[in-house]
Image 1 (cartoon, rainbow, N blue to C red):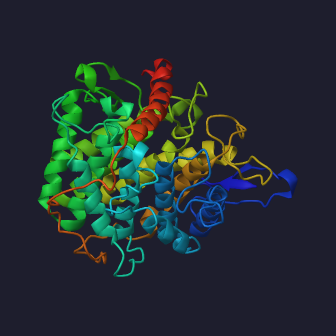
Image 2: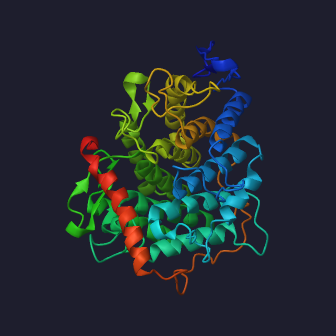
Image 3: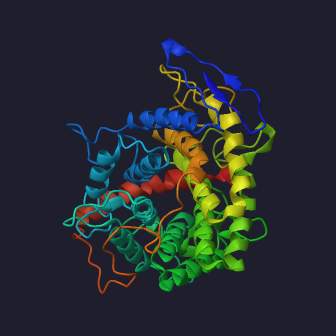
Length: 454
């Protein structure tokens, strides 16, 4: 049985029952910390059903097919926060091994096994996790290993080095290497990754160079038209071949979420009206992702209603919940609004969705559907976990900084690296193979976009 009590004044439980094949019942009251932690434990356990990287035949740090490498980096971020919110260290050694096993020869999360098809956004999501490790005082690696802060800064500068002025007057491309067809697409999430990582490093280190980069990135996204400042909607991106004039106006939760949290980090650092207003504006723009007719349930508006969400997109709501949770702590006036979004989503959405499978607690893709929608996967479990565990943001310290107890050693203080060398050479055969693969991915992404224009 899954039970949710929406508010402090609630004197009863909303009851949703499913006892499929003798499944263990879950009972949760959103006002009870132990109850929330138990639900988070169930959902985290469901996530790890998709990991075999620590077993014979598995790939360290990578989840089972069809989950791409980038989503693994995001999933480890969910489990890192799971430890921080609940105190359960069950997965900590696996998490440590996964992170350090994927740093690559340059300590920049460009391992040789993935780099041929790695995009800027892929790299950013692994960096978000090690940045969180620094902010959460996750156990530091041994002194002969790269450190969390060092890794975050190295990724940032490797991304900043790719800022491209040759088209669209700036911005990051989707893909890192010219051999990949996505190289000619400048997307919001890659730039959102640079923005959020800059904001987090700025707050952690106090180095204003990162503030400058965050401002530069925001300004570019706004000026190129990926941000609609009338509604504060963030659009997907555009091709650099036409100088970013044909913008794909479909919206994803993780774009808005990244700019929301980044603005909150910068507000928390500067206390400026500029970043306070931007945080508030982005927060108000999130209304498009909450379906009022269903009680305010979070939904991936660009694909859920037509059941077209691909494997990646089924995880996006996890990042909205995660980054709303960070925002609620760093910009406290947003807490009530964000808490209501999370509670309404749980009560009217997650509770009825996570009732599937043979265990009776498997989560579906769409939380708008009455009951489990007969889908399952890593992204679905991650999204439920993040939504539930971010109710605990007021139970734990705010993200640490170097001056408030952050213990991650290393890093270069935000100084630009003098040079950057890719850890391999690209052969003609490599170019052909990677080009074919990413051509297929890009065509699948853009070919289905006509129905999701907002």
